[in-house]
Image (cartoon, rainbow over all chains, first blue to last red; front, side):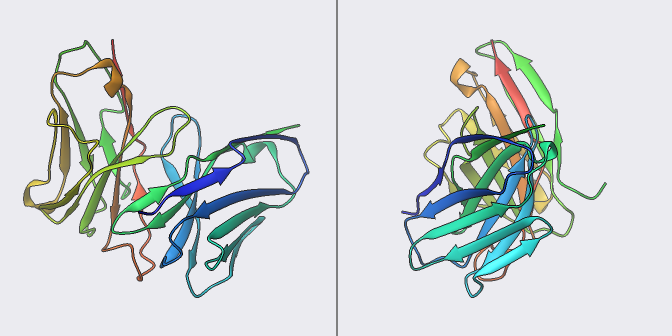
Length: 109
Length: 117
């Protein structure tokens, strides 16, 4: 049974810092891994989808890496801004998505 | 707006009442998913449909919960005899096809908040 965990559960940093969010999964036989952003009380917005054949995927200040063999993915946020404050969730697909518990990020000015 | 639409966005109900949520997926998407999310937790899978067929139901979906997707278009999630523990956000999502090996992206609605008092 696939299980996904995320650390840290919460993070509070000053503006401008570079951040690393961690995601681990127990079954390395995954097809892809997806990172989402969730603003308070809102639905989920897809940020990055990494195929199993890829090691990295980049979008603007966001970079996600995937290491299937170790069952890990990291989301790197460069030069964080207050607008990055949200919950970040990683998920892996079976016939549906299995989510981690998320990392609540607060970036203060 | 061609995204996933959920209604109502907020519902407050008394314990013991029935509630129904509706989800309109992206029109060409064959798969439709329901998730439940409580504060501080990631979304938990409830059920999903391939067109009109309900292919999987989580153990979280007690006999008070029922979901339908008539004609493979919109879906409804009904909760009968609501309990305070049902208070959560109910998320609907859709995808063109399966999520494995195809890189299909899943799209989420804004969610329906349920508060049972």
